[in-house]
Image (tube, rainbow, N blue to C red; front, side, top):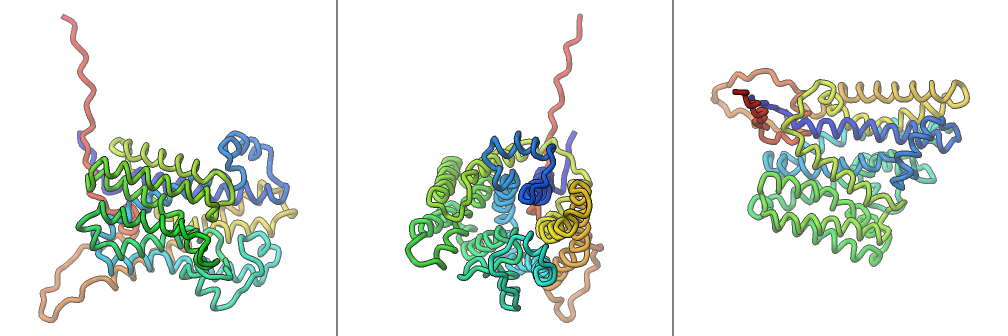
Length: 401
């Protein structure tokens, strides 16, 4: 029996569970801990999960963030190869910026009008809200300039993604011809930034800190290259070791790390990713994973702004357990609204802009309606070749004579 799938199911599952774990870490674990309202159940759960892994400072959501990086490396290169440089750049722009712009505006509004919520939201002091800071936060520039003004705390991962996309676009012609050489250049660039981390002032140091996370994304890229036999196994293995070594080096240099769990988080994320990849042939597509995966970006962006605002307003008014339920519900609702009204329409607009114009006199082809939501999700999961795997039948039992 053959199972043919149009989606990469394990990526859907990883994205969905990753977003949920990040939301749990920020809303259920960290906020009540900082305010002294954390329940015994959550404390017990953290004692057997985050604490033994030395992740009690940031929570096991660290693993999810590292997993997002690995996934991005796995799916971005085939998307870029399929689309080409210009289309890929426009596609990523319309995928990332509109939803981030809405989140930045919402965070700025909360910080300007609700002082108690402003203290709860991740930000830099002093809070500087202006059109300049709104634009720099929307286009990730705030993480590359001094002084740094952060209005959306979780957006720090997006600037790393944007740097990788830029690097991918620049190297795309070489990737088409000699992938092994392109990946080697990617690793060399990271090494140069790490070696000059403290040499050229705070602005250069900020860029180097963001570059120090690229090895996690490159590890995902290497898994794609090895899985689809784009590079020799021995080359990919050496590059994986080099990428891991650069990531550990960044930790030893203290490049933006605030605890000692970053390496362990990446190791767990990489192992989870490999298990999912190897189990993909037997995983089934399910609507719940598809829907959650489609909304991962909106939930990731909005959960802190919406959830922490609700918690800060309800703290002391109602029991913390009920406040947490309302905060989680509000975050999910906000993510759904953003997905339907901003993220999906923006992606559709980007696709329309990329459509080739019909030449005068050319025959108009009739096309079937496009399911935009499914197309968004399929591009997130890289539009990899359809996975068709033979499920081995169990050997027949010998019959008695």
